[in-house]
Amino acid sequence: MNRTRVPERIHTVVIGGGQAGLSVGYHLARRRVPFVILEANERIGDTWRARWDSLRLFTPACFDGLDGMRFPAAPWSFPTKDAMADYLEAYAAMFELPVRTGVRVDRLTRVSGGFRVSAGADVIEAENVVVAMANFQKPRVPSFATGLDPSIVQLHSSEYRSPAQLRDGGVLVVGAGNSGAEIAIEVVRTHPTKLAGRDTGQVPFRIDSRAARFVIPVVFRLLFHRVLSVATPVGRRVRRKVIAVGGPLIRVKRSHLAAAGVERLPKVTGVRDGRPVADDIVIDAANVIWCTGFHPGFEWIDIPVHGEIEPRHERGVVADVPGLYFVGLHFLSAMSSVMIHGVGRDADRIAKRISRTTVAPVQHHGRTPWRRRGRANAA
Image (cartoon, rainbow, N blue to C red; front, side):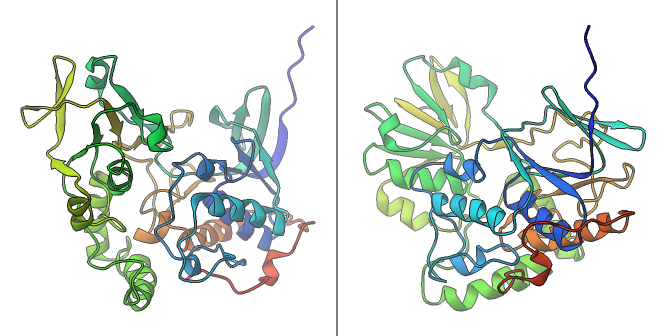
């Protein structure tokens, strides 16, 4: 006889165990709210570990710590992606946050009294759900990519690890944002490389220069955190542009690409005779790397909150679905929302709102983050 499994009951479920989810967990624990964090990967930080081998953060280590725990590196060094992954794992261990790894949520629905979170055969019912994930979960590749000659190696930026994956011959990198520029500057050392796509602009200084040590704190703490926010007219204008087309180049500059020998091309618009076409120019390439972004990937949310580009929310709060929140989305409340140094402010605000609905707060049995072990890094 088949028996229906009784759902587990937890006050708050946080979906996603990256920097956004761990930040939410830290602030919920501070307020003694019962919660669990569900992480699809088998190990905390694996999303970072899966990115290309040479990736380094754009932010110096002094801005790479989450609230309550400094990043263990020289303040003005730029950590590797593996160092960031290890830091997140250490952060969860430091505060003994209740993270369940290897749990991929495949459906979120509303039920009487709250929400049902389904992950395979496992079901949790909760009063609150925080979707703590960035809105770039599923690789986006143009539909005409299927028309390329089968001999051409095609990789999305999420699949690219190093030039060793490429065959001999030219490389076309499609998408001229930060990922495209960083990958192009690497592969051009071993392959003739073209970079196609709209110019996204660039920050007007080198992030690893001495001058940047004076500029970056102003940019991160004032410009990205306060001026470019949904609370200001200029922030709302910039938000629309950033959400639609992305931000400027940060580390790699136009001059770096030119000096390295990367040829710039306009946007790739289709395929002709099995070859990519940009501005009616047929490009002979043995490899194509698609740095064309991601879909939000929130189809598993079976609640009508989906907008054209992102879920509907106001600074992470879904007003017409009480108890549902988002943290970690691009420009959630400010330019800094998706950045490590900025996510804590959003997490703190959402955790505070949730704590007001908690009838019987419970004692957190792990480390006590509300005692602020070490200096917090939130701006």
